[in-house]
Length: 159
Image (cartoon, rainbow, N blue to C red; front, side, top):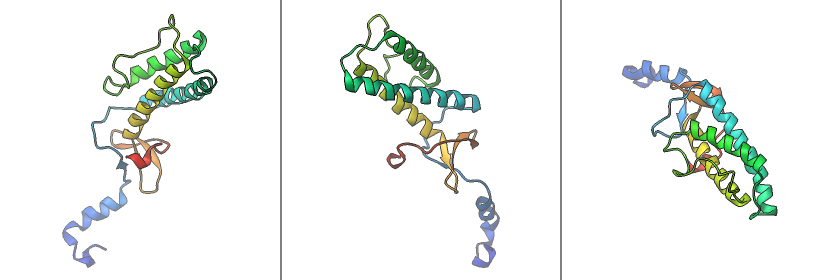
């Protein structure tokens, strides 16, 4: 096919490139080594943080300066700790923050602020580790290959 166009020297490479599954990486920056276990853990934490964010956002609208209760704060702290474990030091949103102090209950708006920072960082990491094939499907990229299916990045236009 390409020989007829006078492209004989590169015909084989072009045909191979067109038949291989192709990925478009969103970011060419340094990539964290991930595997399927990391993806499962990451998606669980991302979903939990999203749920907490929605819940705390409702609380913060009603009572922004109200104190977060210990029960919810315990679960939020456990999830933040896991997020800290899967994010590198450079990927974490705030260098001097790990979890909330349960003896000094933060306000709903403070918790919402922190959850939003973590959600943004997790989305950035996720966006850096997913790719789109030529058919428009999104996948986690594991060792340069298709991993599990992924949802599109939430900030696609910003990349």
